[in-house]
Image 1 (cartoon, rainbow, N blue to C red):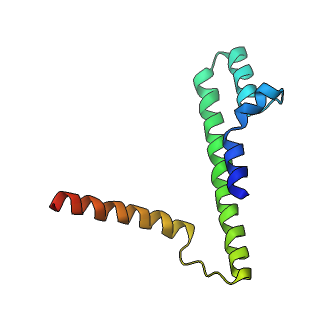
Image 2: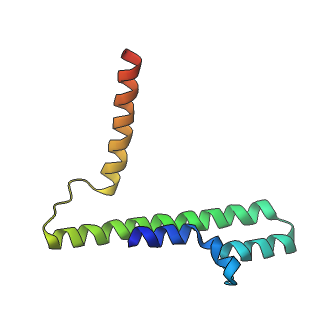
Image 3: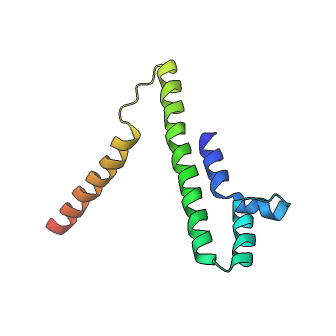
Length: 99
């Protein structure tokens, strides 16, 4: 369920079709009034990035607590999974270069 919420938050521009004034639609209105399109959409992109990043950390905390209640031990934190991915890529790159 949290992944669905995160996906919906990223795809909220679909709501403008329904008639809900959301962030992207408001950014379009401001940029057409001020002719500062680039700046407005950069701020909008940063806003979306901040929302999804914050929600990702909240989601990871919720999943860790629920897993602990069920008895599933979380082997790695979110940051450890990110660094592991980089290490795995580096290992794969080294193997392909040596072959």
